[in-house]
Amino acid sequence: MRMFAFIAVLVTGALLLSAVEDFPVWGDPHSLTNQSPVSHHYITESLNDTEVPNVVSAVLADYRGYDTMFETVVIFTGGIAIIAILRGLGANATPISAGETHEKPNLIVKTTSRIIMPVIQLFALYVVAHGHHSPAAGSKAASSLGRATY
Image (cartoon, rainbow, N blue to C red; front, side):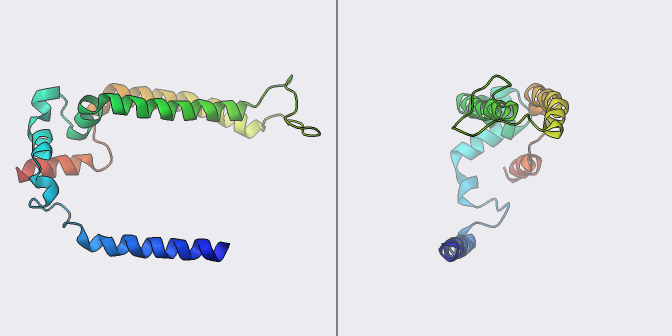
C-alpha cells in the first residue's frame, strides 16, 4: 500500500512539474492574466471603489465579501470544534464505548491553550480592524507590480 502511495505522489509531482513550463514568467505584464479587463479594473479602480489602499484586501473584503465571510465562518467552526475536542467531555461524561474512559486533559495542553487563545483572538481582531492597511503575504509586491505595469 505504501508503494502505491509513493508511486501516486511521484506521478502527481511529475505532472505538476511538467505544467510549470506553461506558466507565464513571474511579473510579466503581457501575460494573459494581466490582459484581463477584470484584473485591470481591480488594480486601477479598487481604491476609488472601496477606499481600501491594499488591492488584495479590497478584493477579499469588498468585492468578494460574502465569500470571505462564509470562509471565515468555516474556519471559526473548525476552531470551535478544536476547542471542544481539547476541552473534552468533562468530569461527569459517560465513556464513549464500553471499557473506555476519559483521562483528564494534559496540564501542558490546558495551560498553553489558556495562554495562547487570548493572543490569537486579539491578533484576529487586529487583522479584521487593520488588515486593509497592511499587505498579506506577497500582496504588497503584487499590487505594486500591478500598478507599475498599467
